[in-house]
Image (cartoon, rainbow, N blue to C red):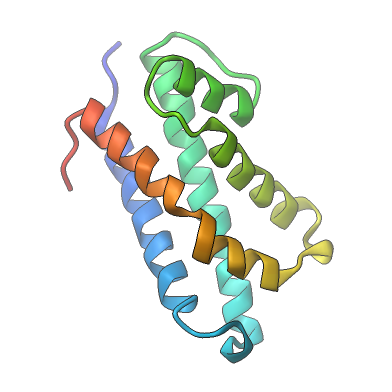
Amino acid sequence: MPINVDHLKQRIKEILESKGELNRLTAKSYAQLSREEKYAIRYHIIVLAESLGSICVQIATEEFKHTPQSYSECFKLMEEKGICDCAKDLTAIMRLRNLLTHRYWTIDDAQIYGSIKNNFKVIDKFLRSVKGKYAISL
């Protein structure tokens, strides 16, 4: 079955939208963020991570005929198949999503803010790879 490029495009758009909002919010210093903006950051990380995972699972199942048991396994498969070399970093984003979703009371918003500012470049790398492999332009 050929890859559903329209689905990939939609997930990429969601990632870019959330990433844009995260960039806008983190353009402020951490001290300037309101409580609502901190919660918005959390929400956009969840959306971004879910969309990353959806892309990965779609590629794994449609192209490689493999149903991964976890996002971590899926990102490792993408690395093995040469789609990305960033499984560790993408898995870390999914772990952050899990923390936000299941253990939100233990969140250190300042640490999340720092991660966005310093560690989210891997998302662009992954998207470039997917868009290049499947000839996607937005």
